[in-house]
View 1 (tube, rainbow, N blue to C red):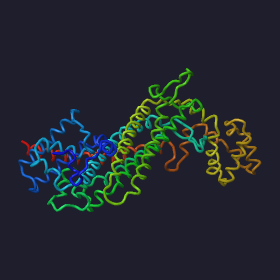
View 2: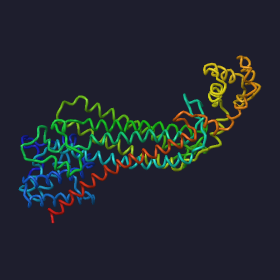
View 3: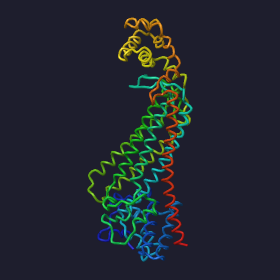
Length: 494
């Protein structure tokens, strides 16, 4: 049998140069296991529908199992005479068991719905791997947050010291962003985990197939009703890449924070040496190279999202070869995000906080100015805009941050603004010297008071558990389908 049996209506064989240009064979190795699984499910259904007999299904499943074992043992020969993995596997089965049985494995399906089912099976698996890594990362951050309550740090706006906060509050902000990514994974997963198999080329088939059965055998949540939608839509790929792009954006900003905090200008944290490099000429240098590379690799992920949109935007409805260029883009983005999370897990699990330096940065700044203004509002009923002006005048007269609490300077400013009657009761100002008391005055929900930070930490733990339970349900559904399919296979080939 000729190897280019998909070209029945074309007399000329594809030249080597054209084949190399057109081939996705090496990229298809990424989905080869999914192609076997999809073929197993499709042919079990064909047998149950009476389209192939028991002897034929046994031969087909045994032959597919041989290919599976070769793939597992890395000795499956990738014959480069084929343009993609789908005809290669079909050809291998036919060569093994003959045309009478092997020639039936493609009955009632097309390469178009075949590749779509392979991609959906692969992407849901990659999303589950991503969730697993995210939960591991979140656990590390939750532990760091719990251990850094009452470790004070300046909070920044415009990269200038703005208000007093806790390092735990900062980490909780990271966790909240990452949990939203996990929530989006759940939403994307629902749209991906639907069965396109049975749509055939674009308009369905006259073969008496059972699409609901392959949906069950593959662990999908439902099937895609419209046959054009099943083989033509690639919005699920764009959605995945947009999700990964958003995650990369968060991660890049987190990396930038760490780079800044680890610099000698800030010196708030110490990054473990195994994540840093030295200088070729400056012996004092400790460069956070891994974090810098995370920023760069995040840009690749973000760029891949745009690249995929450019590929898809002008493709007419139906199946076209352009789609195959999306596969390596998605694979690259997943692989990059996986490696980035691993690096960040290592960095955050070994990070050391320089509490004295953070506290010094607080003491050497006017970071408590707003707290002082709010004392004037709360305790002395001064209008906020006037309190803002008073504290602004106080800052102008102060030579150092501690002058904010100098009774003589405060008295002068209050007197100049006509508030002589409250000068005698300014002892409450001294409470700002105690940073914990200062934060505990922040009663607004979401502020970095110790009470709020602890309560939010509990909430984040609860949200993480809820999302983790959803993840376990996704995994369980796939495992149940795998068990069902494998039991049927063993019964048929026994």
